[in-house]
Amino acid sequence: MKSEKKKKKNIISNLIFGLIFFAGFGILIYPMISAIYYDYEASNEVNDFNKEVELLSDQQIKARIDKAKAYNQSLTGNEALHDAYSKAQEQEGQREYAKMLEVHEKIGHVEIPAIHQDIPLFAGTTERVLQKGLGHLENTSLPVGGKNTHSIITGHRGLPDKKLFTDLDKMKIGDMIYVHNIQGILAYKVERIKVIKPDDFSDLKIKKDTDRLTLLTCTPYMVNSHRLIVTGHRVPYTPEATGHQSTQEPWWYKFLYVYKNYLIGIGLSIVIYLLYRYFKKYRKKKVDR
Image (cartoon, rainbow, N blue to C red):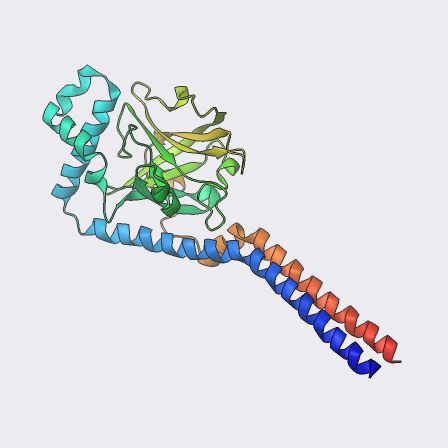
């Protein structure tokens, strides 16, 4: 009778431990599984954009880029540049905002090799947009390049189900940022990394005769009282000159790099569980003797 009670007690304690362990294990791996799924979706979005762009004619691309540049020109406030595009084009560009660059809602994708990210880029910064990928900040230059431009790209950090700009603070001066739009690839070399107040726009303004791009996110991580900005200046794009790999890195390499902390946690959890089982059996054998 006593042994039956003891057996029943052991079954209940094992069941409780198992439930606690697997609940904790599920909580641990949820962010990783969600992030892997988002990476898969983002990769499909990027491939979809690239395939659809191939269907556009040179004339269509030129017309769209001209409208985008006219929009950008309207932001500079430099009257001397108005001869390049007519007032009518400027007004049309302003009305359409980023629609001229959109392909299936996306206006491109942003590739950041240093943090192993290639993320779809959308127009605007609504929460709906920022849950899907990166957003182009309204009233800043569209990412088509050219003098007197400064494009601001925003993204979240610390979301439980996707990385996005979570690792943006790991970037260094000299790192490369690649913006893929309907016309091709723009390369920017990081020249400044800075933390600013949310209402400080001095570093985000257009500077004469420059072509800049800034990645912007909230900081410190999970506090979000300030903004982290990573700014790059345009450099000529050739894969050889910029060190840009034309082929995507193997999925397993990105998986190991991005999710190494999760994998370590999972490994430790399994080891702890196996040790628990081993010592429990060992103790039971000693008692039986």
